[in-house]
Image (tube, rainbow, N blue to C red; front, side, top):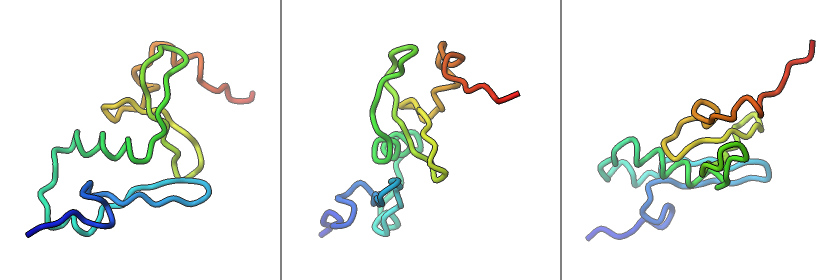
Length: 98
């Protein structure tokens, strides 16, 4: 009889945190279970490590993901960088010093 994994709670991912960031790692129990389709897996991972928010330009639901370099990037539920599909992305671009 199979029981729910104590580390991941059955999600297949273990989320680690430190003072500056969060990241997800596949749980070892995942090797025994069949993998879900990639889109569902990506959405689940984004919800595990991303902070929910709304775009100030288009009011679309986004998830903020903090990368290892400390920079935050907005992603859509589909896993796309929101700067790609936001009609107001130009308002948020940083100008390079001359």
